[in-house]
Image (tube, rainbow, N blue to C red; front, side, top):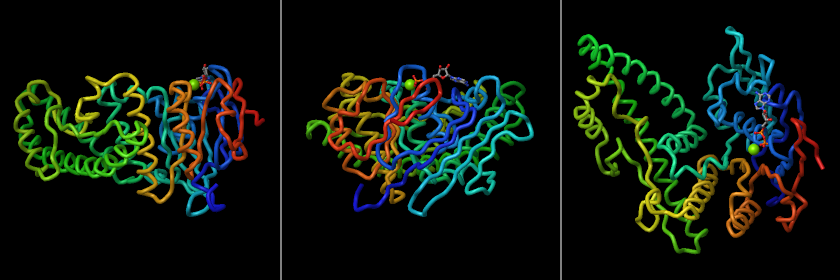
Length: 380
Ligand SMILES: Nc1ncnc2c1ncn2[C@@H]1O[C@H](COP(=O)(O)OP(=O)(O)O)[C@@H](O)[C@H]1O
Ligand SMILES: [Mg+2]
């Protein structure tokens, strides 16, 4: 701990009917929490529940009824967190009856807006599937960026929700036009809203990338002893790299004109932030096309470390770090680098592992060890 101060941290967690946890109530240390246990016992589920508390949804795209413990119709997650403002209690409850659904309470006060939850407990998650960020689908990369931005700018989350609604309406209208050639005027009206929100989202993403990029570059240089220069760029509508000085309004208008006929023909929106992507380069070579698996791994680790710094810069506090099974995926050198970084910073960390990794730390006084078995947690 630095200077006796405590970082942002999750002090207590209570789960009810969350996946294979019937009812648990745990206290965590503000430093390193190791969750050890054999496979299929609930380690990932626990990490998932903590991340749920941070972003208000499950990262594995699971629906609430999948998360609810089998043969039950509700679940609850309650977390006591300590951040720079002091103590707060975040509570999310779900009930599958129509008139209840999802309820969020912050310090006992009900809120209807998910945006109110965001930013209370910021978290960076690093799970084995993240190792596919570079190779995987554009959706994965957009999710990474959108989740990060939403946590520090809840307004952005609200915009994304609005965008998705507009997209549904616009697609509906395009289908109608393609089917019965009616609704052209209505489309013009929708386009104004659509273009405005596209612009807002893209501008925000570009602003964040401008902050994330130097942090990622720095982390990656450290990780590769200065050998590799990692960069990422925003890919607009699959083929155009937006330059900062370009007018985004103009670009969006031009692009919409280009796809207009195709959109009507196919009855679907063919441009916008939901189709954008990121490209990663190492020493100017496209990492997806030319990088080795080892380079992908290092790049993802650098991105995760940069995310930590990004949250710190935006909110003044390091987020909590959730490492699900990644130790076994990283080689000794990368693992040691990661440990030294966690150790030197002001970060609460949750690490799942099947093997004993206690010995990896020189200084063990700030470590809490838990044994996870069949949806129970024992502190040892
Ligand atoms: N909704 C659910 N209700 C009860 N058990 C569940 C639910 N969803 C998953 N499980 C159980 O959780 C276990 C997997 O937990 P997980 O956290 O992924 O394991 P691990 O410890 O390997 O990370 C499996 O045994 C699975 O059957
Ligand atoms: Mg797991």
